[in-house]
View 1: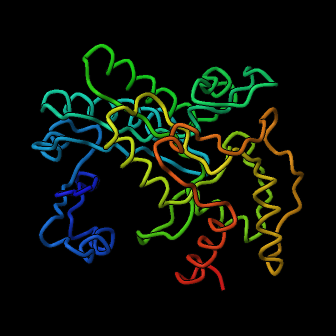
View 2: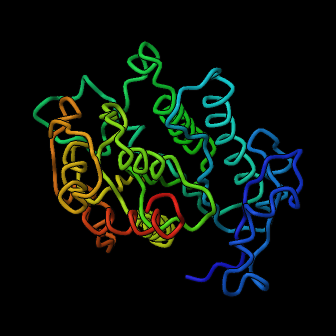
Length: 301
């Protein structure tokens, strides 16, 4: 597939020059001089979105606030950018005649879901329990759930072609100069953090597979609905045990294997993407690539 343009979201109010280190790696890409265009954009500023996607036949909406730490104002920091930002992107796409929008959701729009049948493997039919999230202050899953539901409602009402990818914990070689939330979580594990991420983990997935998943659901017009994107459904305890097996030199915490209550393990859980031709990189390689990335970038030695 040939992409003629890549659009990068930058906060309004800060110049591209001020964020030079955030885009330098993109400008060094092969073909960037001819095919890369950068736009300063804010999800809550509709006109900036229109300027960025004008002339596009397809849009990939990946941007949404994500943090592994507590937030002071969840409405402002998580919910508004996720929900209003998604609606702004979809509105602009509809107005500008975009053919298909691929929305990056998350397994966090699938779990935590404590009311899901205990004897049934979680799949694309499962949705995060909004009330459970509100009661327990779990804001990221709530933001992803509300944003995805808003996207589906918009698509139905306005007749926009929308398809969704729901990635798990995304790790591997980091291309940008800063770590994403999943890699920060992994780094903290290697430093001894014993958090079991009870409400946040459903399985791991390689960066490359997430990228390929987006291309597959965009190119295959038969692709529809949600697409779970994990190499397997596993517990965080399984992941930690595999890291300890591969890298005994790290002082890892001892966690039980069952860290996600009620989560049934499953291989080939991402059947819809597998049927589209995606061959997932296994957990062991995800871990190895992640460790090598952290080493090469000086985060660990």
